[in-house]
Length: 352
Ligand code: PHE
Image 1 (cartoon, rainbow, N blue to C red):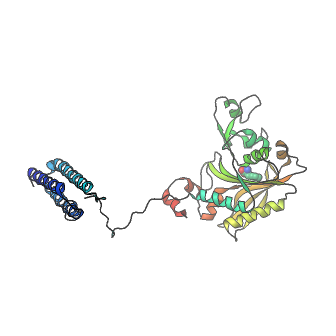
Image 2 (cartoon, rainbow, N blue to C red; image 1 turned 180 degrees about the vertical axis):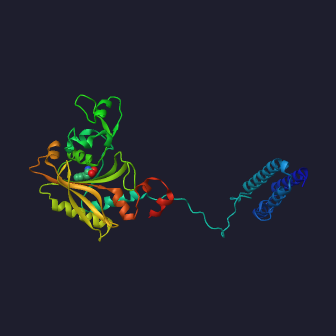
Image 3 (cartoon, rainbow, N blue to C red; image 1 turned 120 degrees about the vertical axis):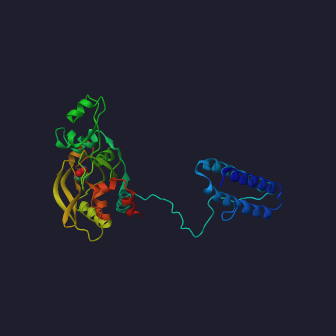
């Protein structure tokens, strides 16, 4: 079809439509005109649009442009007529009309990350056991990450190779040495354990205490199926008169069966931490092997002394559990890295 023929057809349609719409005098007549010109199935615009297909390639842009102008012109005339007659809601013309036979569009909703779900679930279980939730900073000083936790200056846990020290200008000398001196600005590091929060809480809150603290910790580990340089811990601390190791064990057992299921098999292994005495590591049984998911023990008297609590009067237990290890067992996730690849196809599986 020739371009000028097409343009003429468009122009006369616009002229005719304007003339009709200027004089239309009832809502019904307006609706008829709307259908006549802009109806989705056999409206005039629709049939002209079909003619576009027969226009030669080089003329298409000009033809398309004019078509859009005419369509806008008719829509404007329709809107003016509707306004004049006090009719509201003139339907979008050639735009998408509602077709109830088409499948609906599903809104693309996010889902809650399995670790976030676990954090909430852990808080809920520990809340029932009477533990209050507290928080501490992820950037720490050596006092809270080490010294007050009975980890002396020359302890290998303070090695720069095992910690993310922050390279602040003033602190660089102590960083290189992996320690701080009284005179220098203290080094800062990303906390390597949530046990820091034990110290912060005992420094500031009145006794007795029963708290948990959940959050991120950082260690320069090479990522593999069970290690990641950032992970989450749940720290627990109970300080009162006459707190015992038996209570520690029953709290952890209760916790494990609530979170992992009544049939979970857990065991306590004698171990060592500078800030607890005696100390244990806690394992669960999964797929034919014991998997460690945390450490625990009775608060060491040196830790109490560091925060000014009398170890002759008060006793307590503390534990630190790996949230990823718990979450993985609960959801059957076998590679910790999957949790942090941000692949929604993986994460969606855990939608609640
Ligand atoms: N902070 C220890 C760790 O990160 C765990 C722990 C917490 C052990 C509290 C004993 C008491 O491995």
